[in-house]
Image 1: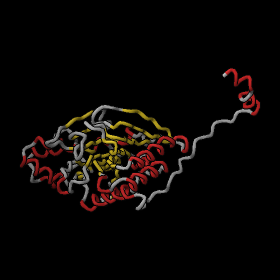
Image 2: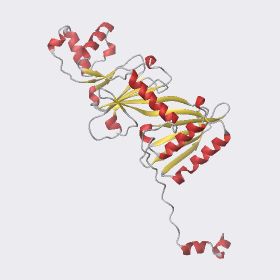
Image 3: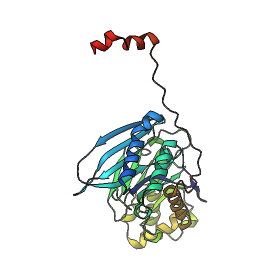
Image 4: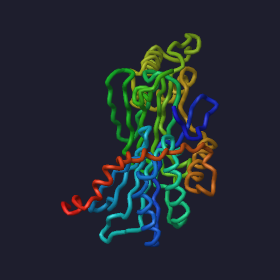
Length: 323
């Protein structure tokens, strides 16, 4: 896995910024023209493919550009928000730092936007916090809460759970990262949260998710549970019973006993602060060090030169008259 400045927690989790949406405001028309000129020539100067499309629909950006690198990674830039009155100064950057931050083209564009746009009108709209753990997907569970719940199950290991809606501070997703990214090596499960960095840690509705450490409970440790509660605990650990559907008293009691058999997937306030520091590094570049080696995007191959006799023939008077 490629990670951009990952945070490794004491309980074996890997935290990264896996998606980022930043809104900029570029007020000077000359700066906007300079940015447009820069974007239009990137595929001539570097090994990057650009796809451009316009849009006039309200709520979208007038000019849209996707830049794709040789390794398949890409990022999006939108220029000029279509409102009741077009807002030509609005720019949106949508990128996965894990994939793109090492590319020179991305660093050039990020540095230009951070240096040119007004700081007080630069806003990180939302970001995706990825929490990876080396565990089989069948052994990891996302508990339901008051948010909308959806599940797509192809098999016990190829299973995706969703909580909430994809919006600022909304969506939560638990899925098999090994299958999704066709990885080799140990099994990898990812819990992904879409967050608004302006919301304090204490105000975030963190999901409850856990990875099973062992399915076997010692009888002497369960002496204070009834036979029914033992059966419920076994079913919960096996993923067959939804803990949130139990009564409050029973749920709290079983959660206490579960702590001995599962690893709760949590993010500490200090680790979350480090994630926010990663975001500040990205929005401060080039005044801050990204902490990665630049991967030079090799310029594309030049077009093959024509033989001299062909060029001479093209310049001959006969051909000129024919044209």
